[in-house]
Image (cartoon, rainbow, N blue to C red; front, side, top):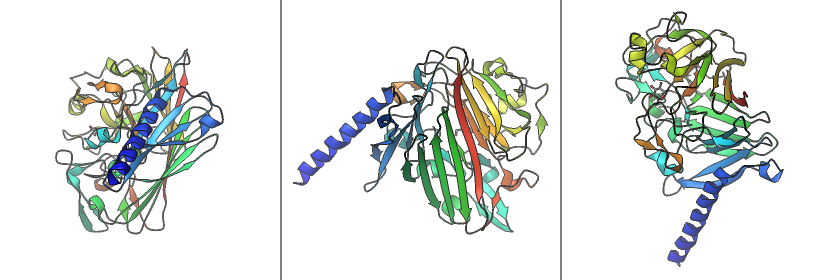
Length: 387
Ligand code: BGC
């Protein structure tokens, strides 16, 4: 009897997985049926818990797949100048790939995105110690950050479908103080943009810096690096770092440096400028740019144009800064979706956020969240084409 149940269960899982794979290559034509949020099994998190893959469509034909494991964007299609849809984010075909340990492909990052020096900070006179998971520093929320937990998902169907994800991080989890209730809502909008609304509240003073870690390659196909992508960053300063990628505290004007993206520039043009110590430290670009518009308005922070496909990605955010990372640590050891090998600089990240190491830098905008306050930020990634 038990064996039969097992057989039925595995056949069901296999068919769901197959369905998930075949859905990925489907081009959705925007009928009301296709606007439904589909759910399929994504893999086993533990003996008693399963991860689910949610597929969101819009009438324009874009598909975004998000898992409740890590709130991860697993795939995301965007049209090229001929109307052909391709997946433009790096990731894995199944949960097992993510569990093997990948560098945060598409995941939600928290409680504190980016680095905290020596995994330590003091808040209200009390010192907190975090795991040092990146050389001497703490990175992206710790050993089991928000990218590795199972979120509670609520799909909300409609013309602009949403996936609401909630997670409560416990007081002391990964060393951070306070029970932190987090809500992230992904909304696939009609204009081919994906809006991400982040919210958090706490019962004890804590530090919060949430972001998403999607790796983009706008060419589609994952057969080449991102060096010919043309990038504009609406930022007139960046944060120089030390050899362990912790900001020195200086806000340095980009003018006259290899970090000036105020006018559109090919990533490859200056990425190997070895005379620049900052490029050497980052092994390329792996720095936080301070947006010229420091208001909390939703403003254009970055845009990327890929000439072969004509795809354009614009990033709008309420945050004060953006980490531009050019996949310098990708080295061909990870095989991702469809058996594609992710080689050096095959993806770029535009992680909207507060400055790294703010908990140790009183002059940086504060990342402290107190009881009674609500952390609230929004980032929008919008696709279009230039012919
Ligand atoms: C960091 C990189 C790191 C990458 C993956 C980025 O946000 O800035 O240094 O290698 O995440 O962990």
